Length: 215
Image 1: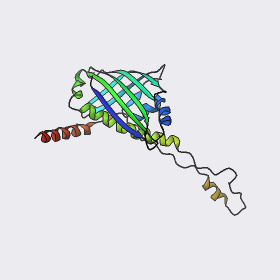
Image 2: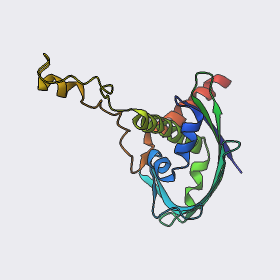
Image 3: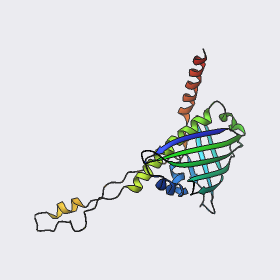
Image 4: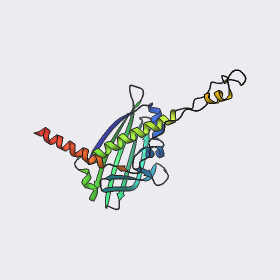
C-alpha cells in the first residue's frame, strides 16, 4: 500500500496535546474538509471527508475505528470511505506518535497507509495525494495550535484582596477596566471542504523542476 509520512510541531506540552487528541470532536473540527455524521461510540466514528480538486469533488463517507495507547502516546485510526458519485473507495490506516520537543512543545508524527480504487484512483498517481496530505497536515497543525492556545488563555483577573475600594482615589470606572477578561485566541474558521486546486499547480511545477534537473 502507498504510504505517506507527515511531521509537525505544536507549541504545547505533550500531555496537553494528548488530551486534546482524545477529544475526537475537537480533532475532526481541526481537520479541513472532515466532519462527523454521528456520535463516537466504543471507539468508532462515522463521518465524511470532502476534497475539491478543480472541477472534481471527492466526498467520502464511512466509518473509522480509533485505538490509543497512553503509555506510548500513540494512536491509530483505521477507516473505510466510499464516494458514491464517483464509484470510488478509499481505505487507510493513520498512526500518530507524540514526542516531547526540545523547546517544551510536542512533535507529532503521522504515518498513513492507504489504497484508492475506482475513478478517483487516478489522483493516487503523480504526487497529488501526497500534496493533498501535506496541505491537510499544515492546516490541521495551524488549527490545532489555535485551538490549544484558546484553551490555555485565561482571563486576566485582579489578585485576591487587591481590588481597589471606591472612595480611595480610584473611580468605579477604573476598577471595572482592571477586571475585564483578556480576549481569547480564536481558532481558524472551519473549512467544510478542502479546495486543493492550487495543489495541482504545485505538483506540476515540481514535475517541471525534476524534468530540468535530469537534463
